[in-house]
Image (cartoon, rainbow, N blue to C red):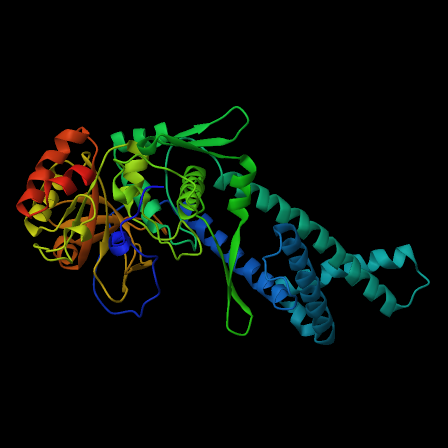
Length: 458
């Protein structure tokens, strides 16, 4: 395995962390919202909340804290519905005036049909026994139908989350700290050439498995259909100090099978790096093999430079505005870092004039999250230690894409962006490797980087 510079993690973007809110005004891009998709998203969020509540309750009454299956959740929901039906029925019979409410009247009439059926099956039983049989029969039906619907919903959700078409359409980040990866993919998907990079990196095989090709290191990773389906269903429990489950969240992203396949491929690659099972060419840039060595999940934390190099085979650049322009220890310089506000202004101008030329991501140099309402009256946050894809730059605004919900771009004033931006990772999609590196080499010379280091990393 290629040796990793001890300073390599200096520029690795860490997973997003929850921060206290501060007030600051910002805006979102005037995008055309899909009302249908909003309804679907809202419904999915409500169902997820309902399922997680049931899953938490069950997990906290058993030793196994893993989230139960969708089929079991559907059955458990049927039990809850049966208990609710029985409670409403008994209360409405005790207080007949409640039946003036249409919905309650419907509950009563529906359960009366089950009780009447119980009477016809065995008329010799008492009224109390008929009531019990009717309630139990209704509950059994709700449990069975809930289990079937849970299975069907899980099948449909898994199918929708694992479809592969060679395109990145949108991302909804899970709880894995891989915003760097998702934002890198989103930034590539913004341009024609970037879409080709993604398309050329993913392939569906005859056995329905998926192959992800890392052109930069000439290596491929195979993702089986079972691995993809299992990843789509994988949840991570949040357990408090008392051993209680307080929440469940999907480990990986949802909404796009291509993105999920890339997540699994990068995870396999980084797992090999972590365990010393891979040898890389000596000219591999350092950011291609960086990872957070102490992270429990190897996919945690990184930079889009790794995405760009592995998928395209071309080197990329980084502008770090948090560092001084002159630095005495060149070993701290990650490959192609540009500690220059002058070059930053040049990049902003060039990106604005040639938006199809670059794939770019950024992080914001903020200590606390910045909440605001977008033009669609949705609550949005700009988060510290979080990567965003740069979709567009003009004289007034910078449009960012949050991997948590990339289909709704966030538009912020350019002055605010210049004030808050911490670092930018960008990849020139139009120039070849040598052409785009020459000016960077010249700048590195001016900054005092020695020739040997330049030849090794540039």
